[in-house]
Amino acid sequence: MGRITVLGAGSWGTTLAQVLALKGKEVSLWAREEEVRASIAERRENSMYLPGVELSAGITPFTSIKEALDSSDFIVSVVPSHGLRGVFSGARGFIKDGALIVSATKGIEEGGLKTPNGVISEVLSGKDFSFAVLSGPSFAKEVSRMLPAALTAASASPEAAQRAQEEFSTGYFRVYTNDDTTGVELGGALKNVVAIASGISDGLGLGHNARAALITRGLAEMARLGVRLGARRETFSGLSGLGDLVLTCTGPLSRNYSVGVAIGKGESIGDITGRMLDVAEGVKTSRAARELASRNGVEMPIAEAVYSVIYEGKQPKEAVLDLMGRELKGE
Image (cartoon, rainbow, N blue to C red):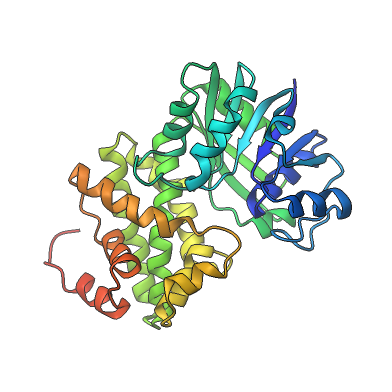
């Protein structure tokens, strides 16, 4: 087998590289920023995105995507959704035939409204590769400390899902397999929108009852859209759905939840995102989710409310009142 390459040296990409390297794998880690590459190469630490974690000597950082992909047949994509098309367009010529690409990106492309699978498949059309998704409740800071986590590796190919499972699984990082790629990708993307709503609720001081209602009804609308797009409803009750949703809606380490809290306390979205290093995918995904719901005739009132607060300037309290005042109906 060839080397393993991780594309994207943010907190999660660096953490996944560490998980693999600690298993004795030789891992190439592609970083967009030279300062990140230098920090890892010289100090064995990603001081920008994952400070305080000593990185394995098995991780070799690159800023050249060609060098990072050299001899690699297992590629882990941890590129933010808005940068995915550009990165894979640049990488296309260096990806070996027969490679397995595992996406750990949680988002939906704006404009084309494609999941990472859709974007990568389109960019790499005509090439021979297999695809899997790695998703589930997993904060990078906790995984990097070897605290227990369980995730799902999903692929239409049982062999691809099993290989991803085997490559990643450790005593503290348990990976299950699944064949519902659409459901796993949509769960990972849409839960970020609900997490912003949960944060807004907590920022407004609306209490635990309100947060529980948002999580529960948020899961219902995630599943509605997923089923309409071909996913299985039960996937949203698993690790990549309910599991990730609960974590992201309640944990202070969640970027999307933290964005929501700041909005609820009166900060502007521009100020909030301007000071963040890592991307809060839910900000852009709220726009994509709204458009997907509209195109497919699916009701997603929580996603609509988040969109209206972020992009239309609606006051958070007004958005909550509108959600509570909707027409009464059966669950």
